[in-house]
Image 1 (cartoon, helix red, strand yellow):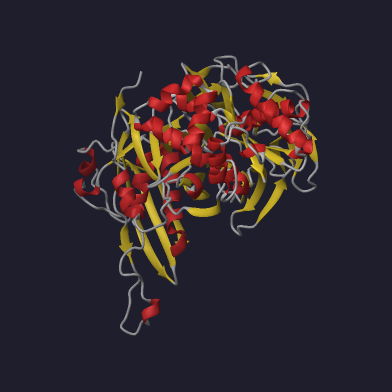
Image 2 (tube, each protein chain N blue to C red):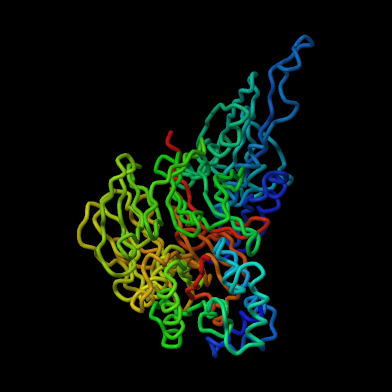
Length: 191
Length: 449
């Protein structure tokens, strides 16, 4: 949870306000980001929030703190770019913003080096506008991430694209900060 | 200009009482805004008549001790809900004439009641009932309509709505839609415990029946033109959107489209033989028509943009859909046999999710205005667009089959509720469920009979 929050903050400096916000709405929004991302993905869900399946999370964290060099699956390294699993978008847009290119590149390299690993790209939209259009918009965003992964060496067969549109918000508020958290593509590793 | 009169809660108390004890997803309907000058009228409680009995009558053949339903109360609620009528409360009535009485019109003129309905509910035996009623013009002292219909015990509620239909049509010249139904989706619970259900209820919110439940979202329910089947999109396959057609009576369903990518936004052709859908199997969302008998597909759009939310016009000749091919979502129209798409909307930067009135003259849509998403209606001939609602996150407009109202989804605080607005924008209703969110309303067609 704490780790997740850090990730979000690191990726979106504009959202720093969120962390020190005092209103219940904002905190709830942050909370639900975690629960929603873990609920949408079935078996792969534990990977989204903790980075690893049963038991591994604790040891991964310990190792990260004690040892500068991480040994094991790089996907479990909390200091790796691979720990960042969400790409955010502007309103009604699907262009990948420059802040997220390095993250996508890290995932592409990881997938290229681990051809047995599968990832689901889950596209989402904020609540504004109509539901089916937002399903399409979420898919368009996930496809944009998929194309970038493929260009950088991941195989199409490793990637599954789905879209939840506005159906699974990460944050429940109606404020711009919440909406920004909801316009996203999540990487969900199926391990 | 209309002056607006608020009479919140006039109807809701009644409904809560009536529906207590039934399933939890019951819709509670209240009028939040009606028109000044709603027509005052009186619907007298229907007299209860039973055939003469003798001491030898076996217990199972005895009539019910009291009328199984209050026909007049249902008719009053139906008429009040339209916002166009203001029924006199029974406690104020000075007399309770029935269908065989001589009417003393002065008893009704003092309340300014323009119309009077009197009636009788008669038990015929063997679970058969007869409803007789008369509609009067109080000021002329003249009968406008006299009618009788019969029903079994199970169908009495529907028969009461038929009485409302007859009265409404006589007084407004417009066909009533009180015997129709509404489909909607509810979502309750948070996080992993969130559950989605597709429901069908009477147009007055009564008798909701669950069509399907899922851990994953359900979208875009659409009635077949004969009202016997419902198509919808479901994400139940691990987030993969798939289109189903379900038989309402049997509950049996068929998966009609499950290609790679999006399979969504189903809309029935007026002949009930085809579905227009959105498929993204070619890489981005395009409009297709699926022949439901042969499962043949016909691709209607070819564009790198998002093309979605198709809806047939009632003549079956064209399909209206949402596309952002011009940079922003707007409505376009394409011949259903294929051809060039023509842009329909030019006002504002966001127009999506069309619903066409049954006469083919009006298109309701979600229109963005000052950053708010509202229901607007456009006259197809003139192109004039009018915003009907004042919400900020309105969605999924659906015309009533008589074209009088548009039901839609709205957001109040964090809750999803349904609302309905008259096509002239003057009458507003709010429809809520006791718990959770309700969304994706679809008004049924008229019954096929």
